[in-house]
Image (cartoon, rainbow, N blue to C red; front, side, top):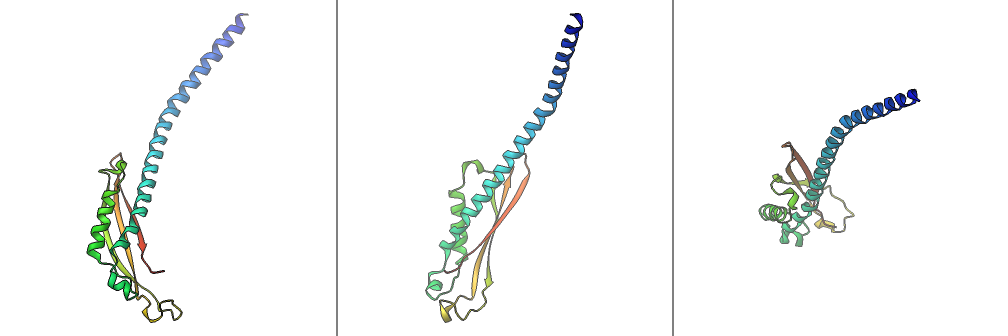
Length: 154
């Protein structure tokens, strides 16, 4: 029986060593991967929030231009409305970490289509709003997120 007990003690000691090595490797890897997943989810949520906010720029459309069939943005009012909407609806998780870096309004020319439903009053250009926001991650790293939306009549 003495050989059986030594083999058993050796196998328990071997298992303890293996479990300790696994714990020394698995715990730091697990913690690091949880941090990476947390940052990734934060980035995805910030990205979704920017996409959710951009359509608010349509509130800055020029009513006189719309009556004439032209889609034009009043850039000053659209800029202010979009920034106010961005700050008013900002989730608490992004307080102090997600800030608007730039807001650009450009016009993209629309090719003439003879079969367009507006006929001769077809829009000549399409306004495009581009929003760039900077997300500061918990580690202090900054990440720029950019999205654009084109506003058109349908």
